[in-house]
Length: 169
Image (cartoon, rainbow, N blue to C red; front, top):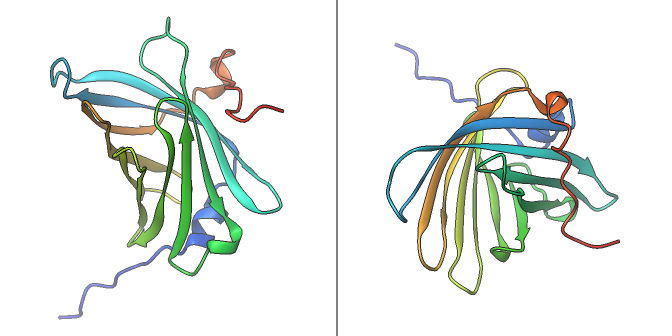
């Protein structure tokens, strides 16, 4: 019996798999407040590269009537090794979180935290050449939120999906 072959996705493989730049994911989340009932949400984001980093700018929409919860994820090129990279997550609601993006089989694990005690754990799992799903946990100071979503491909159908960057200018 042959041992199971483990495929490790490298950080540069992940960047290479982002053949398009705009994504829409749909899924469910659970919040510890007020109840653990599953509720739908949508994540829209755009991937771009600056001269120093890969940037992901987007928003999370829980209800269509609400403005999106804007976020930015930065993976600095200078920190990228074969299977790991530094990462920064910024949003108005959580402040700045810093942590690591690590390769794990056919996906990636991200763990980031802030001095305030906010923690974000994110798992990205590839299930096709360029398609992936996300799941994770956001632990805020007064409650926690777990979530899971897959690409839905409806970015072009949502004219209000463009989210303004957090940084001005």
